[in-house]
Length: 90
Image 1 (tube, rainbow, N blue to C red):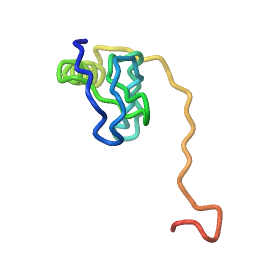
Image 2 (image 1 turned 120 degrees about the vertical axis):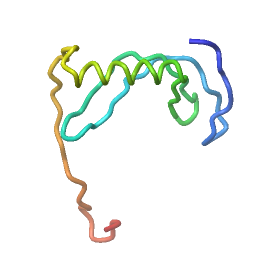
Image 3 (image 1 turned 45 degrees about the horizontal axis):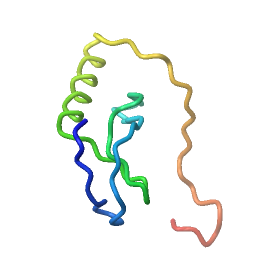
Image 4 (image 1 turned 90 degrees about the horizontal axis):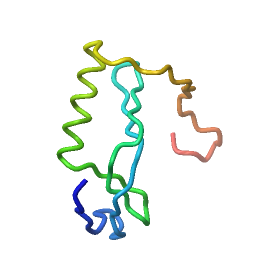
């Protein structure tokens, strides 16, 4: 990953090179790609991917949905947001 360090567009913190788990929900499936190179804000945690990495993610997703990649099962729970307090946002 090339050094594209810059200020975060949300909080003006510094974007630093690191690794992040990419997660997407496609239909009813959750896909996680582990250990993806990313720029991560050292203040708010915002994550950005370079164009090259984004394209690689697209290729991985297409290969997965075409049946060319196998994924390990992922244990996950799903909870629908329902405010628990009377004064919560509806």
